[in-house]
Image (tube, rainbow, N blue to C red; front, side, top):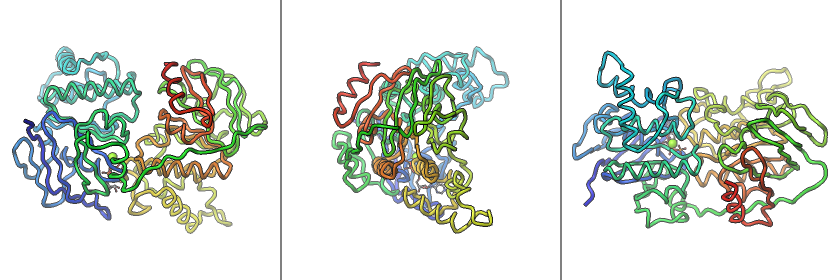
Length: 498
Ligand SMILES: Nc1ncnc2c1ncn2[C@@H]1O[C@H](COP(=O)(O)OP(=O)(O)OP(=O)(O)O)[C@@H](O)[C@H]1O
Ligand SMILES: [Mg+2]
């Protein structure tokens, strides 16, 4: 017999111009693993913020936790009820140690006047013991891997009497092995009767771990389903109202002078002896596990992390590429992996973020910024990437995560690059938007842009690229023509090179 832990009824939330949630009901049982899915902007993060008391729902909501109906529900009530949220940015202090990050909140909450190392150590060790984690207690958090940082955030949650752990997109930056480890932690929590709720755009992972799945569309609940009743196709249909088709990109193999070429590019500790030719209108894929040197290589050809040796040629001519200015001057654009940090000014409007890279194209004959041109460009960007935003003047931080990603992409596409490097172009983006972004990339290729897609999602590079390179420990260890190879062959190759 399962018992209910939390029950929300009639949740509405309206922001200026947007109905983020509309009469949503949501329940979670004790010890249940419940996933929340939906397209970008469908209201997932808003629902989480309401459960954690950070955001208040509009009038008429009924919130019941552990059998008690709560009035004027606030963040402090959520904490008292044992609800802990782990946000995507983890909210850790990078310059404090692992133990301090885990224990300090608890010590401060208990109102202790003196803080003793022994006590910090005890609390941290105890919390880690609950999930059998083994982290270096006196290492600074900034020095440990992202996966370990996530464990720190989970352990911090476990210092209290926790009943429900909520994770907003916990796996976007994790490798497959780290995801496995996280899932075993989730199952461990479940076995202790703790409920776990999480949001993910990686549908395979949702099927792997969830018992129930709640689907949101445009702020309304489509339904809650036992995992067994859904498959990929059904779920996408319920999320988007459309059927998803994944057609393969067909580009022609070319020869002769490449648009862009690197020969023997090396940098010790990063990548070694990389050779690659990119032709106009070609989409090339680079895949490999996180930590294989893909991002370091991409940053090298964008001048962020210049190579120590090797040659770079543009249209057959040897070229210097020592900094970002060189790269931009050569018509190279780079959309970084960690784009929320590197790509956007969060407080600024969507419009300003979009035009920042193309300001000089917007000058009129008097050398002033043409407001008309600017407005035209902004409107075009928003339309072409279907960015869901009430107005171009809204600050970027009010957009949902996936829509923020689109702003960064749009911004670089607007520079009309000759060569476009996309590092994880659809991380955190919903299935329908993924397709839209792939279509845009293909459209750019059709106009002659040379494109490199770096992704750990094999199906993404397989379906969109003419050739796929597999990177491992800083080297290109395999090259495949997608027309002549099956996705499984490449998958097996990657598994063997681990
Ligand atoms: N503080 C805010 N001010 C105005 N609008 C907001 C605010 N927070 C969220 N919204 C809007 O509410 C809607 C739902 O956003 P939410 O962040 O809940 O989506 P999401 O399902 O988490 O999407 P994603 O998958 O992209 O993270 C979006 O249209 C968003 O722009
Ligand atoms: Mg979100």
